[in-house]
Image (cartoon, rainbow, N blue to C red; front, top):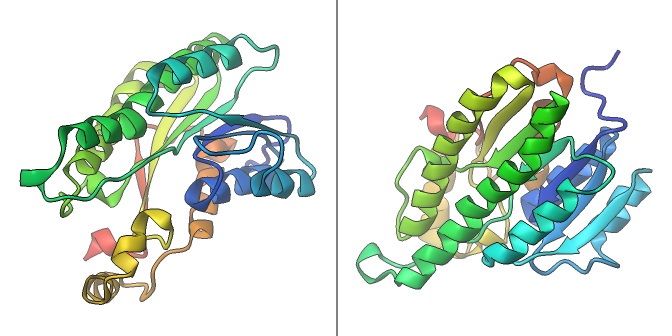
Length: 253
């Protein structure tokens, strides 16, 4: 048997419209999983990620959910929890980032980032996790960050949220591991996506980042594919409470 085979599994991937979430959803489909893709701006009827998943021979269902609106997230999660087919894999990837120095950082920005990047993931994990616990099997994967370990610059809300994600991974794992549900995180390094465009566009900052990455390049969204499939699979049945860096060696410096 192939321990990485996800045939018959149903995966929910938030933030699936583009970037890291797109790559994660596509990787899970390539490994055999059917996918529910969710994003604040995803067209539920027609999208690039829907086309990619279906081209891989898997089922795709799309939803548009604003992760800054808690009521929307709760309603979405409850709908999935009550559906006939259970969710086997939950990837909490939806996120946003707001950049401003801490002394001038607007409180509404801080609140929004925590709601999207941390609270929405807990809500989905709590509601969908109940059914996983009843079934005695499930995989929950959070997108953490290098800023789950470091402080960052001009992103106090994002750093607080991603540090919270690291703690939440451990807290949920402590409670759920003995009941067949693993909870882990992936900490992407500096990946060339929309969220890091401001850094890529700053020549001095981009160069300083690149000089510290032992792999010698910015990451690509597809670099997260293998880690996602691994943590979602039976190959990682005894891996839980962990944050797996996929950073080209950044944290090793």
